[in-house]
Length: 293
Image 1 (spheres, rainbow, N blue to C red):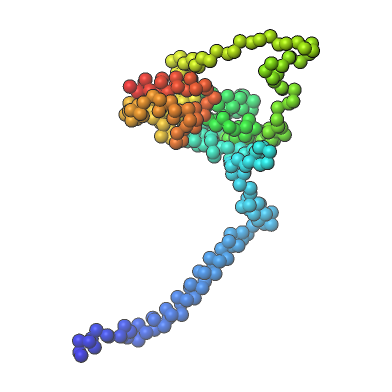
Image 2 (cartoon, rainbow, N blue to C red; image 1 turned 135 degrees about the horizontal axis):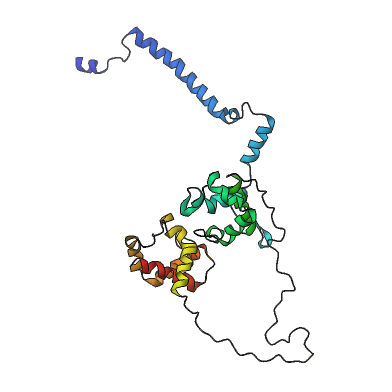
């Protein structure tokens, strides 16, 4: 019995311990209530000290449409809402312009941008749409509308010392081609031909396989598009001439490499984001593979 009595000794042995327990019983619930109240009212407290205009701006920012964040919204009729400049920048341009990769001027670096801004808006836009040096056309995304590219250029340039005006959306960006651009049906007489005239017979086009691009074409495409990632090994791309990085890819065979380049793989877009022909893309792959053997 004595051992059992010892095992069940009371936790509170002194008056001081009793006082501490009683105080904790009052203080702890009060603290929990205060913290819970702050948590529930914390959202409103974030606007403390703001004017009505600032609160309205903050609200508008929170409910801004998803399309403004760089997403492409498909609407009825096949037309789409064009992205804002910051959305295009985040989705496409930031890969190189955020860290200054492949010679791209970093956004916010006024010194790096000053010479480019001095060339004028039209020149900057032309370079962005057509590509220049290590930057492929439209930053490697051929699906971008010219207006979207222009907005991204204005966004980056204005963050780096320029004061360009953002271009408005084109009213006919999704319009169909004019009706005047029609094609003559096979066997039909050209417009303006005398009634009953029979068009001259044309020989059928020879079904020949597309000619293979030359090694020079492959090198040219590499230097204009592929080097943006393969020159420095960006986004997991094997660096040009790095035999270790290319070895497991070469084991798959050239057909597999050609298919990956044409259709895109992982972070690499189809054809590396270029508008080159299939033959030119294959030649560029052959050029890079030869340098890694």
